[in-house]
Length: 150
Image (tube, rainbow, N blue to C red):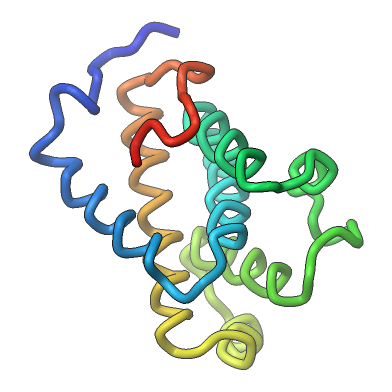
């Protein structure tokens, strides 16, 4: 696959806002490992190879196990994830589908503070935007280096 537009070079004005949101989220009270799992899961659903490459590399660099990463697409059937992670993944899938039933929202609200839930929702929306940019402009997977974007 050939890159159509290098959004990181040509879209600096546009994507600086996304980098700002990502910077804010890195300071969130939510665990970095939880963010990575959510970003990977949403990127799996959205079929974004570039983001999968990036976030699996980042997750492994921060201590995530290959077993959990390999099992993430089937997280409901595995014993590898904590209750908090399971709630975040269920909520992320629901938000990604633009259909958050009361049952899922109530479980998420019981697990996360209001600020954490807002940050989690923002993270889901942000990874969706990154997925769409990388898919539309065909950024080449396999080229990401850990820490490349700060």
